[in-house]
Image (cartoon, rainbow, N blue to C red):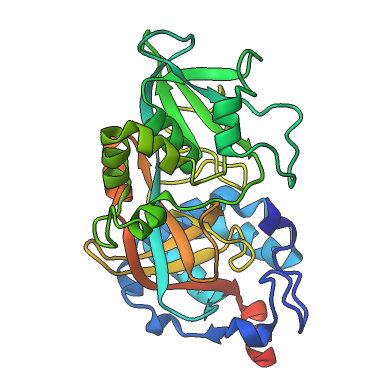
Length: 347
């Protein structure tokens, strides 16, 4: 929740919302005509997602924008006009961007341990404090520091899925009686995220082109002893909480405390891209995207001005789609007109 509170607390230097000086940010104001595919997007869908979190943007710059937003939902033309009249595109940092994907897994599980369901996901222990390091992943898994404390939320079939559920940060667990339990991010142990995929590439097990969530899972399952050690390369460990009031049709809860939207919500680094702002995405690769997204989430691996994670939705197919995304492109932030011009004047 860092971004919303200090969304546009900008001065000449430093630019607090960016965490660096304007000069080093290399911010460049563009025209909407510079955005590849802008005319062809569904701006009304993007505006609906923007409205979901607009009320959380407390800076006075956003007050008139958020007040006008619902009226612009009448048509796609009015939605596009809303963005073109009230915002200007600003590219912060230099391309190319790196885009990956994430999703909400749906996994089989149980409320109690059994021979089939033997791998727990945990609630946050009371001694774990934000901003402080606790035990790392290896120590948690080998010391039994969480066992027997009543912190188990559910038990899953596969330790690899437990790991990737932590990477995704939320999920649906289908119990034996058919009901689904929604779980969301509740904190972590304070250790930095380290990429298991990059480690497997460094070791020569995978190459840049073959590294994906699917290939990592296959290697770990095929090599359980070595695979367990590989997973411990990432010392970060995520805790969960139940989300009993979250409706089935709603997406998981993002960093702004609201549900995120399939293919419209983006996880960003809030030190560069303020939470809640529209972001024009130009993703290249096998399935190119030209789409207006909303920055509504964060992630441990999402660092830098041109780094973002695209939310692909819920379930198996969403996981298949998200797991292979590792594409270049560019991302352009839409800022309220006065802020965009003020930034351009400083430049």
